[in-house]
Image (cartoon, rainbow, N blue to C red):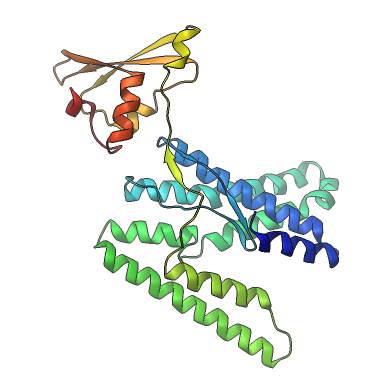
Length: 273
């Protein structure tokens, strides 16, 4: 927890809106956990989530993944919030009385989802935009476009804040959000929250015995796909075949774990055999 996050909680407590603050924190955590779940499908784990005054934050850059997979991880955060909001709305049709107890959770989830879909970095919408652009142009050019859009949006928010100040109804949320976007446009500083590759070695499991799971794959099977065959409490054995269905080798789970840590996730099993 960032110190400013705790300070903001004290402020909300004094103005009598502590439940809204706590609900917002839970929705932000749900959002980041959805990112972490999506990343785990690629073989990465998240070591921590940092609660900031403007929500929960992580280092969203996953070393070694492609732009399509980066988009996949980015969209899962807002999608999870949209699913949650839709679930609460559906609940109201079945149990209308539940509206009074779940309306805040629904609207906060919807707000977090829509804000994160804005195509400005470092929001999820900005990450999706950058990934889509990088698939069609150089990364430097894509970064410039994303930075320009982010700064333009920040300038618009600052202008709106100035106009409201002139009208004597300042909205400091606009100011804080614009400053957050400006900081994001020039890159996030070093963060203690990072994605790292999952260690799925089963060396310790052999002491108590473990069931073997044998899977046959072709030599062009990538490490990313092979990791998806790993199951809890089972030891994976991959029989690797060539295009003519001739067995060319076997890779155990522990060996696969070592290869996964030292290689790119898009490398093929045939390259190691």
